[in-house]
Length: 235
Image 1: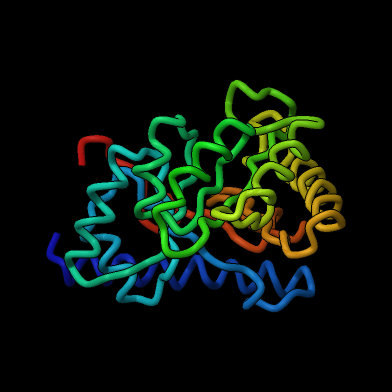
Image 2: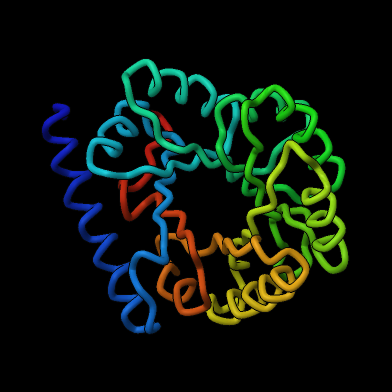
């Protein structure tokens, strides 16, 4: 497919996604401007990111540093400058690499990871925004902090000068209704904001459940398949 053809394909998908967001916000009595689209571009080439930025997308999500780091460099070299969100499980030994290109790390789920990111972010000119990933069902093997660990991690992030606590992120468990999952996340967010009033971000919702996320206060939705199409791992 030519760049022009791919641009048209992405533009059509973007219009559809934005319409879904607008309708979900209207149904929830919210302004569409309250919800930010994060385009999840994992397995897709840097050329798609460049095209999306040309269509007005400003936030881009990736979940593997070994893919994201060279992609971010290629996008920068092409003259585009989206804000990169790291949304996957992050090993501490990758913290320095991620801190070089990411504007937001959405998947911080331990005090040790927060501390590693804090050290890595010391090389930056501005603090690194951080979201605490919450395990909705308490199964931390899939990533996310649960129970009192949510507050321990949040307080640890907030205490670091090189980090900025933004709020929370979660993925709805497969065996939970999205409305139930995102209602739990909203309750956690409300409690967090009482302790840290500026930490108002709620990153929740993907292609299949963005409407439920918006109903429960999501400020960011992470959209991959509905925007870029079904992933081809051979790309």
